[in-house]
Amino acid sequence: MVTKVDTQKAKIAVTPPGPKARELLAKDADLISASVVRWYPLVAESGSGCVIRDVDGNQYIDFNSGLVVMAVGHSHPRVVNAIKDQSEKLIHYSWTDFYYKPLIDLAEQLRKITPGTFTKKVFFCNSGAEANEAALKMTRWHTRKPLFIAYTGAFHGRTFGTMALTASKPVQRKHFFPLLPEVTHVPYPYCYRCPFGLTYPECKLWCVDFIEEEVLKKYHPPEDTAAMFIEPIQGEGGYVVPPDDYFPRLKRILDKYDILLVDDEIQSGMGRTGKWFALEHWGVTPDVVTIAKALASGLPLGAAIAKEEIMDWEGGSHANTFGGNPVACAAALQVIDIIRDEGLMENATRQGSYLIKRLKEMQTKYPLIGDVRGKGLMASAEFVKDRETKEPAPKETEEIMNKCFKRGLAIITAGKSAMRFAPPLIITREILDEGLEIFEGAVKEVAAQLT
Ligand SMILES: Cc1ncc(COP(=O)(O)O)c(C=O)c1O
Image (cartoon, rainbow, N blue to C red; front, side):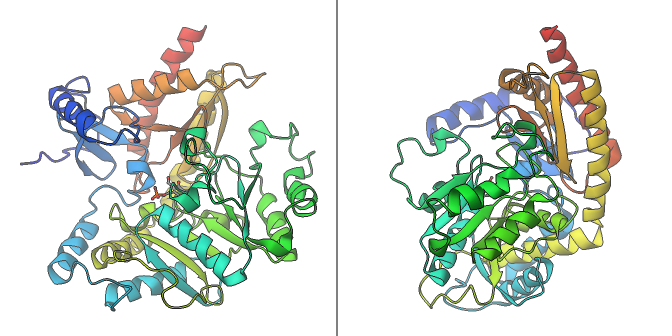
């Protein structure tokens, strides 16, 4: 019998990892692929709302939402019921070979909530990487152009195609070469650490003009460039938010050269930033949107949604067996309704601005916090050894994360030395405050060691 989470509070009964966790960790080390790296030894047993409980009875406030997946909270009763009901009716019937209603209903909803008033079509799959893989193949098929552009620091997945777009850590590519060869990477608008050493707004957004002047006009012919892949807020790269005029200007250049814009909303989408999709903050409409993570509240589901004319590939050119599974679609339909019915985008905006305010207050107290940024409930605090030199503080960041874990806050890092805040969108002020108190306690201790 599984013990359920009893309160929406942190509770450490035994210093983690406790005895039951240690037993499982030993088996895991023996059995599981060495290619996955865990953040810390949290062995999850049950979850509810914003809290996750481990096998030894410890409870953690979840500031990472199971890697930015549990937007409507753990085991939301409406999602659980939809999963139960759909499982009793139909668990699988291969969408690429036959038809079923939950998939059509979900496609209809995705067409409505994604940006753009034009007609769209939907391709279903099982994960974020697969959604981007579909976007790679469909934009190449449609345009008959071989080249792509992506950002340094980007994370778009780890399949062979998407690995060529991903450029956030060498380990993700090392010993896997040669990759899909035709991807050029350009610097992300990371103003706190401008790759060109410039300062916004005096820089006049050279990072956008660079793409036109130094890439498209010098060695990457636009006539051969199918698409540019973007993360509207760079996720794994450090929760980096571009300046407000960046994306409108970028889109003008892409339109000028007839290059498609693929908007990877796998981490930033589904209401996380206070809008269905983060790119909407800048009024820019992409040609293709990719979604996964929060879409089906933990069931594997991904989707690439594109302008109708882009999805003109012929029957048999791309498909899969499990994509758009009926149980996952039933869960996703609930996720969309819950986000609307419970006002979760409004809550993300409200709690997100409170979160940023609290983090900025901490920044005035602890020089270790060099930068605070975010939109809605996708926020980060970047740690530096020195505010002047901005030398990253990865060791200190990891120490803070581990202290948080030992005290009942599940939170993880992003980029070199940022802490990412991505709690479920249902979070209340009270739970947010409790988590932030644990976080501040850890920052205070690590900061004190430095002085
Ligand atoms: C922005 C972004 N794109 C793509 C992916 C890949 O998704 P998946 O792990 O489901 O393949 C991730 C995963 O973290 C992501 O954050």
